[in-house]
Image (tube, rainbow, N blue to C red; front, side, top):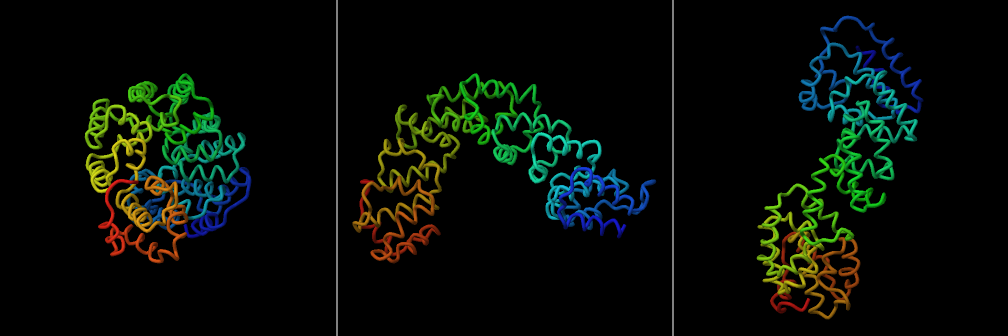
Length: 396
């Protein structure tokens, strides 16, 4: 047992560059170095094996061991570990794969894993590509259907990177029935007028489109149509994600709440949703706080907010409020550049906001960065407090 553990340890600590034939040779040498395979080993303890050989923590092993309670010998998991080592996975990588999917240790190397590796290599994936796939979708890699599904999905997503991104968001894409689910869903998207690039971008953002019932997609499209968002708009497909798993009744209630909360007309609420469909998913409490801040505290007009509704998606305390203090301060002191307003400030990334609104004023307002950082922590400095008291509403 100690000899086998040392052999496995060497495999897991030193990534190999061997081809498949040599990889399987690792397995042969490993088994020949160990005791001959025979009857079940009464001293074999799965939990201890997971800790000492696979690198799991004791709590991880305790959680995983019931799924492997049928194992009476280390021969099959040893072969799987040799396979993973041959892919170039580190010890930490192997531990992550096993912790996420303990049953991976039961996959047949000669019947499933090695043939899948050979087939995926045959369609152009490198061993490092395949190793990354095992890390994010090990439970799918131990299925024979993965090769056919992956080959088709590569064509849909346009690149391996896009496909991996989608798998990370929806891990069982490659387990969906290709003929009964995936292909009909893609055909429906084409029926709606989407080209290959559109489908790739859409499915990277919303991989559930490849795994759900085709009728759900059709119903969701019709639901977005009712909201008045044209299909040619880039926001149409964002709206798909916002309403896909929400009932028509809840959508209608959310629309009415938005109208009431922000004093919007039917036309204005339509504009707001078309520009930021995810406002439909915000909680009533969240919208209430933003309404009070934007309308009551800042004095913004409902129409202004409707045309800039993306502001409602940002953190109130982490972005809206702190940046409003900065804009007010700059305006009060004649430092705000023409063409820049609250909306501009809110929508910029943190890095660009600092470059545009903070750094240019180091000499004229040496404490601005410090005051802004305090505001992001929920603290209002004396300089910002005085500025708040001296400025009225509106004029943003």
